[in-house]
Length: 415
Image 1: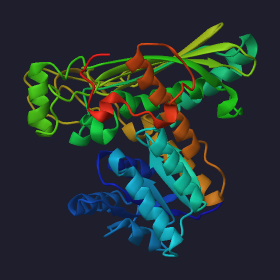
Image 2: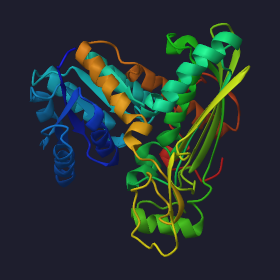
Image 3: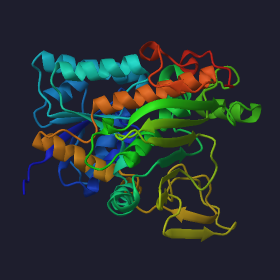
């Protein structure tokens, strides 16, 4: 067995980058060597976290170029905000073209970009210097999704026919940082931020193991978006007070609820359906990820809040608020589910292990920037459907130049 390890650097030092770092305690193939962020204090803090967890002798870097140039760093994980994606990729590519250094791989968090034009540019830039790419979609690597898909196809589908309906949802009470809430920066609202997860989960579940992802084809899409909670006066004020005056949902709302129905066609021409739902207006114990897969004589279901560990705290337990029981935790008392190993349960550990092994071996990862581009196409078609109030054939005309009204700041909070 090879003992070679991949030295990686993080572009970005926020919540997502730190989640990745935490996941690496169970990934033997990776050493975190560096972190760059426009916020030097945050970069230093994330590098310190990596050292504290003993997942690499990480240090903060002054620039992305410096990380590319350092021979101890073999790959980069792009975890910066959506609005910085193009600039970050351009700096990486410029450094490689100038001869400053080389990389064995480049992994990018979801979504790949804010719209189809940007996603194509990201993929083209990486291709221009021959970079092996990985699209980071952690939920596909969640252990329950991996094992459930394997068993359903090996037992149920093999004996009674392929699955025909998949559902996936991601719901919580809202993002951590102000830029997520601003359509002009993030590229939309909850649809762009989180439906990327659910779209890829349903496609994954409906695709026969061993078959290419292109073996099922999206043919129609119908979607709806709404601002259900955060444009209400009370909550718009609360949001602005928490996230800053640039987040004003009385004037520039983003959708906090989105749903879509994606109609696929199998290799044999059979109809398949994917139903996806996302929300920033969900109030429960915390983040809820769920999925279902249904076929002729079988079904499977997954819900991260159906945890095996639960705790009860009476009203006399009045501790400070936090997220020590579950991500996006909304309460500290009552009967609470505890997700003991979130980085593993949500798929981050297996995802990073897969990407590292692919980059080290020179093999193509399960998900590449091309897959990320396909997801963005579906997301933009969903926005287009919601704006038109119509079911659209896929791909609809004008998709490559389309920018959602939410991203342009012209959406008024209703479909």
